Image 1 (cartoon, rainbow, N blue to C red):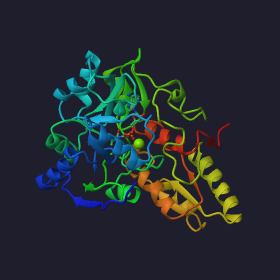
Image 2: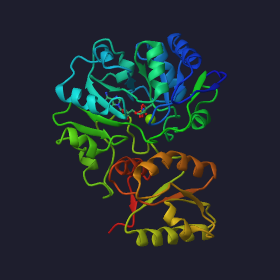
Image 3: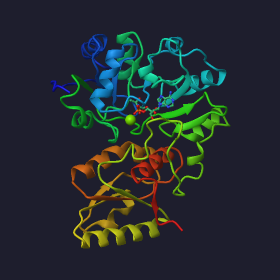
Length: 358
Ligand code: TXA
Ligand code: MG
């Protein structure tokens, strides 16, 4: 694609400046794409009803057209533009979790371009809670389709700098609202299947969803997290096994803290002895184990606090990439709360395999 100048405008994440929002909204109105912050990750937005603009999303990302997009709304009145039916349980979920990191799969309305849905009869809808995202959708006056603002197959961006690293020269504008609070993408919940099913674990935990809809289920592949199963969510097109993989191989370790540290250290030393540059993705408490070993250490914070780890995850992966490590050894962060989403992304980066299991 032709090289274009990418402008970055800093915006106040709580009270976005109207001039910046209006600039971005005008670009969207004119059929352009814009990168903007959400509470999960940065999105690459286009006006959801403009086919030529939607095409630009796929071109800028290098994303195949068979991977459907999430439509972002700023108010529930916009639902009727997008879907034919709003079941009672969808209303209850929206009441509790919107605005927020929950994407609902609903029957597709007739006006929704097939580029958005990749030809499916369903559409993915979410109301983000980031003030910049909401202000942008309101200023445009209609829904915004947006995938994560990374190049296809790369990790999602949680800062404007990450988005710039992937999309410089390919998008006209990035709104910089600082780092994203949640750090993993929204939970995608299928409400068109017989039983509401999580297609992608994310910013709203399974436990939280079940407090509203007790029968919410995980796809078969997620039922026994951590057993080396194929984690590909068959109903979420574009959820390639390596979707979240950084460009370097990642080995995911399991076991008790002690056993996990011991096997990570042994693997690290074996690889270092062969001249490999090894990165370790760990928690604060693991750092002393690896200090002075020659490995590149990246900590994600307190392993007992999945929200903290989630917020640091993608930046940590990118930092190890930038440090030019040849392999990443990564600890397990559990599967409670946001831990399930963290584990899902790490398992995908690891190609579904886990070290240190019986
Ligand atoms: O947090 C998020 O969800 C971020 C921010 C920008 O909102 N967006 C995001 O979009 O992660 P993307 O395109 O990277 O991931 C959307 C996921 C994909 O796995 C896609 O396959 C799935 O949602 N999806 C979209 N429409 C779908 C549909 N109709 N049925 C099933 N899955 C769908
Ligand atoms: Mg994505």
